[in-house]
Image 1 (tube, rainbow, N blue to C red):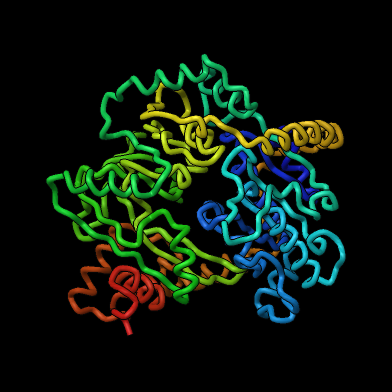
Image 2 (cartoon, rainbow, N blue to C red):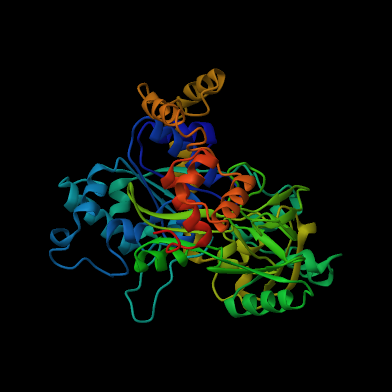
Length: 508
């Protein structure tokens, strides 16, 4: 199904499964829909099966949103003991998004369905919420614990048939630009890897990159990643800089969010360090997965200056990640959005696009791991291998069977919604690709304009020069009122910024 028609299907309010190969724009379409839905005044709950995937969309885990946690079944009286905040969130949700759906167990989707029906008191799938699931069943599957309940893919859940989601199967490739690599990835998805495919991959194990120090390595286990990064950093004969994260929220929420944030709590850097951006730049100067080298540290702030492979040199300032429960913010973490990039795990690479990668698949231990790793790069010439085992080339038999069903269903649904092509064309013709604000939404703009009569820089982005002036003034003994006047910002904003730079307890 084409993206423009898929958007119209979602905007009509249909529950759907958004699927397709890596790099076909699933997250892009989701973000486009979310902007439109919110502009229409809908309450959108954004979740994912893992905290890492949730941060890509700025949401929460489905386990936390629904309150099921890691339980294998709902205990008696579950809804009666639910917090008022969580109940209200579920009650007012119009759209529920669940990303990386391949990693959610079938029985847990049934548990979420049951929670929604109980809370909303409506005996229909998810209590009448529009549910949009996104993911690729050829990627990482649900993990069954030895001490827990065994389960499979969500298509085996009881609610799946009753929901009967529209299948939006995207096939148009936006990542790979090389027919040779695409042929291998397509063969992997079909479970039809031939000798010539394996030979092409193994040939990449015999080729050394021109500059191995600038190539990110993908490994299947954490211990290999940590060992490589620590050794490479220690080998640099330059001064070390350490950046501590700043957090808000209770400890349990912060701890949960921390597991989802790729930027470490303590980021240690040196000039010459190979680093990766772990969030998209608001100014679009870098993207999640962009690789670069630390070339300097900014005077005054000490923020790292990174020269990215795109040719841009950017001073990296702290960014933030949030854990939200509906509209309520539970926790936040502020940190420089970087991590060492000589090596990362295959699991953490899911969703990224890498300029080049050196991959070790000799220890691959689950079907789909090879597909995730190999699909991170755009072409085979930017792919280098240490080695590969049989598991890396394996695809789940269940995933293959599911794919046949989904491809058949998406053909039916494409025919069913073919009439929406005219609506999509009209939207494109009008330039209505971005949502328009609802009428009456000028109140906030008026409020900001009024505030700027007293504080001219209120709600404007903090620049590097602003931060340098703030730090210098504070260290010279200026109080908050003086800094507020100096920088043209509200005293509350000054206090929060100081806490971000110097710690929560530095300002009473």
